Each structure stands twice: as C-alpha cells, then as structure tokens.
Length: 320
Length: 274
Image 1 (tube, one colour):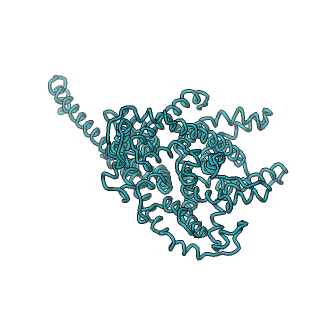
Image 2: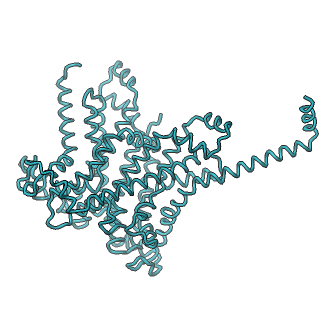
C-alpha cells in the first residue's frame, strides 16, 4: 500500500512522470518502427517482382516506343514520335481497332446473353441441375491452346464436322477459316463457346444470391415471369452483369491464342486483332519499338474503355 | 415428385440440346482419340467411332513427348501456385492486419497493377528474360508470375473478415505478428488459400502466349504449346493428336469435377471487387 502511495505521490511530482511517458512513447515508437519494418518485409517479395516484371516494363515500353530497334532488340536510334505517326498513318492501328471492336461486338453480347439464358433456365431445375451445370461450365477449364486445335478440326473445310453436319442439313459448305468474310465470324463462334463457361458460372452464382422470397412475394402480387425478370432479376443481377461485361470486354481486347492458332491473323488481316498485331510486329518482324508503341496504345484503349464503363454504365448498376 | 408438364419437358429438351452442343467439341475429341487412322481421316467422317483403338494413347507418346509437356506444365504451375500463395498471403497480411507508413499508397499501387494488361509488359519482360539468359528455362517460365495483385486482394478481403478479438487474445498471450500470421491466420484461411491455389494453377496450366515466346525446345515446352505445335507436323495421324489432347484435358476435367466449388467461390469474390 505504502509503496503504491509512494509511486502515486512521485507521479504527481512531475519529472518521473515525464520519464515514464518518455519511456512509453519510446517503446511505442520502437514498436511502430518494428511494425513498419515487418510490414515492408512482408510486402517486399511482391513489390520486388512487380517492380521488375511490371513497373519497369511499362517505363521501358514508353522508352522503346520512342526508339527504333535492331533485330536483336537493341535500341538503334531515337525517333521521337515516328513510331506513333507510322502506326496511325499505316492504317495498322485503325485496322487493329476495327477488327478488335468487331470481334468484341460479335463475342461479348452473344456470350453473355447465352450464358444468362442458360443460367436462368438451369436456376430452378428440380433434377439434373448438376449435370447441366457441369456441361455449361465445362469450356472454362479448357485452355485456349487445346480448344483452338479441336475447333480447327471442326472448322476443317472438307473433313470438318461442322461442314459435314451442314451438308446433312442440306446447306452448302462454309469456308470457315479460309475466307476473309467468314474468318472473324468463325473465330468469334469458337470464342463465344470458350467464354460461355466463365460467364455461366459467374451469372449462375449471381442468380443464386437473389433471395427466393422476393420472387414469392412478387408472384403473390400477380407478377408474371417477364415482369419478375425486369423488376427483380435485372436490378439485383446488375452488379454481376456489370462485372461480366467489364471482364469480357477487357479479355476480348486481349485475345490472342485462338487467333494465332486458327487463322494467324489472316486471311488478308481480317482477324488481325490488337494483340496479334503486337505479337507479329515484335516477335516475327522483330520491331520491338513499333510493337511497344502498339502495346501502349492497347493499354490506353483498355484504360479508356474501363473508365467509360465506370463513369457511364456503373451509374445504372444497383448496389445493395 | 410432381408429373412433368409439357412446358418442363420442352425446357429439358432444349437444355439437353444445348448441353450436347456445348459438350460436342469434347465428345468429338474423345471419339477421335479412339479411332483408327483410317477412320479419323475418312470421308464422310465418322460421327461415332467404330472401334476402340486404345493403343492410340500409348502411340502418341512416341509421336510427341506428351509426358514431358505435362510434367513441365505441372512443375511450373505447382511452383507458381506455391509462390503466389506465399507472396500474396504475406502482402495480404500486411495490408489487412498491420499499420505502417504509406499503406494507402502501397495498396493503390497493388490495385493499379490489376488494371495493366499484361501484354504491355510483354516485350520488355521478354528482353529482361533474354538478358538474364533465361530463355527456354524453368526460371523464365516461373519467376515473372510469382506475385499476384489479384491474389493479394482476394486474401486481404478474407483476412479482414477474421474477428479482431482473435488478434487481441493472441497478443495477450505474447503472440507477435509473425506467429499470429503463421499459426492463426493461415490455418483459418484455408478456403481462401484453396481458391487462390486452384485459380493460379489453372491459369498457369492454360497459359499460352508467354510459354510460346520463351520456350523453343521440346524439352521445355508446356502442354498448350506442345499440343498446338502438332498441327504443323506433316503426315500426322489425327487420331494420335486427339489422343494427346484427351490426355492433356483430362486433368482439367477432373479439376472441374472436384474443384468447381472452390473456383466458383473465387470468381464470385472476383465479381464482388468489380
């Protein structure tokens, strides 16, 4: 007791209190410092890898886009904005934009609508639900490499199954991958199939998240299927739908594998999407400067598209 | 069970037709894989195989080193998966449970990397890997992918949901950050770690452009590149090509059967962030 009194009285006297608080702040400071060091140690591996394989490359891309390079990839000369001027004047950029935009228009809405329809139809199945879910999400796990090879055979002009089935139905064979009119459509058909799995799974789990009671009470109020879809499903699904649209557009602009395997950008550049054009310029023609210029433009286009969607489309999205 | 109404029957028929259409490329692959060479290149083509030529699955190993392709891909995917789990969980812990200077800045730096299309970094990365003499090596396939912003974000969201009281209690017991991270947070986060594991494994197993750029010997090829190279071989027996494809897609199909739940959860988490 007396000891405690002593301490208390001492504390009132000022000086020792300062020492105690000083000690406490010192150890607190030390703890904070230690936590800072530890936190950055935890971040270090990721930061280090990002720095080398992401941040440095972006800066290097800017640098390369202002230079011409020799076939070994060494910088040959500073050319200012010549790469950009050439990209625009040669029509390469606009052709790439046109093909990529067409490709996105052909694949994104079709794949999402189809997936939405299938997700809605399988949502309330009483039996066989798992089987259908397995079937419709299957393309998700198949890689672009193997899928493209399989489809290349299906598209084969004489031995391919697609033309054979068309023949059975009395339709003349279609020059799927070999005619400039059909090539982009064919690649899009395959891409819709490939993206179906992802879209189906995401939209299915979005539908799962809508409480059944809402439908029950709407039914009691006499709402039909279409009305329920319009006033319950659409608003509540809109965040998921927004996500799917965003991801689909970005991935359409990044498509490469199926193009490279099915058509190699041809015939007559009719399927030369953006990333294929970057690949061709950099790793076939070995013009790293020109390739980097295109890559930077792709970055800007994707950034712009994402910005537009967040700015204009997301306002219509209903978050709970 | 109620009787099936006409409408429901129509629904099931429509769904069954759709399912067959979606599954057809895979069914076709397995059918081709068991045909004889003559059947595989016959015209009119056989819709259903008239034989069960299982020897194809053995012969394909003589045609192309499928074993090496699959082995390479599994090795690379497994190391990347483990690496991503380590780097992402550490970074995620720092963001979720620690206070430090510049946290907001660092976090926005991480999030911003998710906005960068990987193709923009592709050319300089290729040059870096070439300068390191890592072309056609495992390091070249692995190291650029050891960190993941998406994974960090996914795990951070999960770590944030862990109750605060848990950390307070652990602190009272004299448990520091490192021990708390290793012995409390990680074991509790198995579902999220599982999701990231499946996601990153699948991503690596299926990647195409990067392995295409930096591998050029059969010894180093991954599955996707090796298989797609088959189309250039002259005098190829297509039944063998499809036997190879069947072997390659089998792990993915198994993953779909057993890991669908994990995958859905992971992608739903991804959807939430959007």
